[in-house]
Amino acid sequence: MAAKALSFDVGDYVVYPKHGVGRVIELQSQEIAGAKLELYVLRFEKERMTLRVPTNKAESVGMRKLSSSITLKEALETLKGKPKVKRTMWSRRAQEYEAKINSGDLVSIAEVVRDLFRAEDQPEQSYSERQIFEAATSRLARELAAMEETDEPRAQQKIIEILREAAVALAK
Image 1 (cartoon, rainbow, N blue to C red):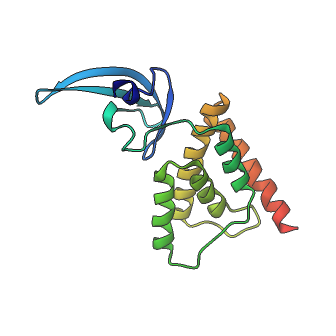
Image 2: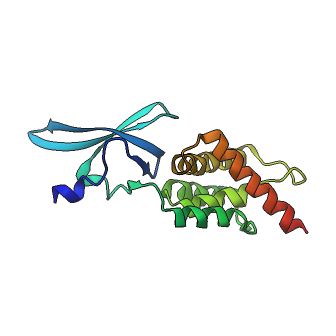
């Protein structure tokens, strides 16, 4: 049981669905209400946030290792697809986009980025659309950066280039 629970090591990059990519900086033992608790201490540099997750709860909260290269490739392919914009009210779509971002699923996050991307020749985004687009792009870029051992701005640039090339190809 203990070996299964401790599936992350200090120094590992992990994805916590609601916060994105963080790094395990420490394994702690604490006694809370008379019970001994093993904790992962996660550091999210961008948010300047530290999070403690009980090792036995890591799986149930959706904490996972970085995506596989196959999943990353699928997510980048998703960016090249035709945007799917539902004709529902924005508030409803915004909730769906937020749920996809917070799911921690790389392909779902890529769908949000693809669907909200606007090329230079397209109409301006609303403030809330831009906020969600930036949140999704940042989340995708952080995982891409961790996997390709680069930084977030370079990863974001790669994502935007893929989106621009896809927009040009789809416009033909």
